Amino acid sequence: MSWFLNFVSVALYAAFIQNLVFNGGYGASESIRMSLKYGRVIPFSLMIAGYSTFTAVVCRALDLNPRINALSFAFHTAIFGGVLAFSYLIIATVLRVVFHVKRKTLSTMGVAALNSMVFAIPLINRRSGAGFAESIGMGIGSGIAFVFAVVIIYVGIDKLDKIKGIPKAFNGIPAIFIYVALVSMAFSGLSGSILFA
Image (cartoon, rainbow, N blue to C red):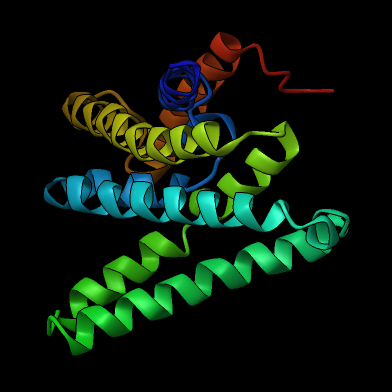
């Protein structure tokens, strides 16, 4: 039962307190882009959660090998990147050949798979010494975190569109970036992160 509590606590922590989009900037550009295409948020987030979970578990299993575990950070980064790219190629090939999935869906899946947030999950799990339950929780929590971030950005963009007094130089994308920066500072305060050292 303790593995389940570890899984749930890490998933909730990743989703709402240590939101990787706001605290780490991982996948921030994609979350802004998805907030402008609100109808694709759920499928894209499911893809992110799936890839995050899969790569986190596979990379955790690889770390059980003493030889791989003893390698430097650079080698781990290369191995984890290889796992991510290989998993995308296998899944995309199966979906294209067996299920005849459209190229547009495969390209969206590629953007989700190679998202910086997905790539960061195994490295964060390794650095924190997470087990399998925590790795799965972090993967699923990152998908929830992405949805949460997109909703917050979408609401902000909606509010910014209604404000008439924004100076012309800050209208549009600059206002969105300022809004995301302010939300990021709020999340950093909530999680106890140090912004400046």
